[in-house]
Amino acid sequence: MRKLKLIWDFRGPAGKKTAEHHLIHLKEYIAIEKLNISITGTEDLSDVHSIAYLVIEEDKIKPIRDALKPHRGQVYQG
Image (cartoon, rainbow, N blue to C red):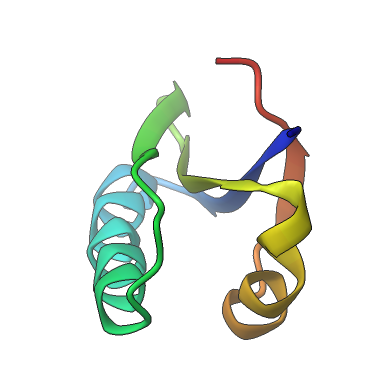
């Protein structure tokens, strides 16, 4: 089963802190909805661009994508 990485982008000098804070909310959503999602995190792409993400199987993506409205997605290479 192909996995997709849902990504939220945060830019600017506060981007890193905002991505870290957004990850807290993603984890809360996962717990509340009792989802089987174990791959989440943040990455710093530059000094002014950070992301928060979660990885989900492609066949389960639609309700999560519609509820959380990620900025973009990509095939997960992990």
